[in-house]
Length: 162
Image (cartoon, rainbow, N blue to C red):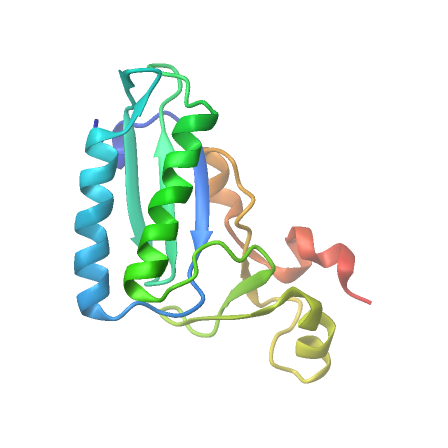
C-alpha cells in the first residue's frame, strides 16, 4: 500500500539501489510510475506492505517499508530485486552493482566510480575527505535522513583510504 514518506516511522526499513548512470527525464517519469504501482501492490505473506519508493538525484531508487504493520520477508525483498532486474532489461540501467561508490559532484549532479578506484580518485583530486559520498548501506529511515549523504571521512569507505 503506497504510503507517503512523512507517514513512515523513523525505523521504517530502507533499501537503496544505485543506478550506473543518471536517468533521463522520460525514464524518470516512467520508472517513477512503475515504482508507485509496485509499492501500491507490494505484499508480504499475503499482507499489504505500507511502503514508499522514490528516485533521488536521478540515480537512486529507494524503497521504504513500515514493518510495524507487516514484516517484509525474503520473498518480498526478492520481489524488489526482480523489479530492478526487469528495469535493467527494459531501460538498460544496472541498479544492482554494489561495488560502485556514488558521490556528489555538485548539489544536483551525482557521479560514481568503482570502489577499487577510491584511492586513485583521492590521489587525482577528483574527490577529497569532504566530498559527499552516498552510504547505500543505511537500513532505516532515520539513518537515511542523517547518514545517507556523508563526507568521505565520515563514511564507511573512510577505513579503506590509504
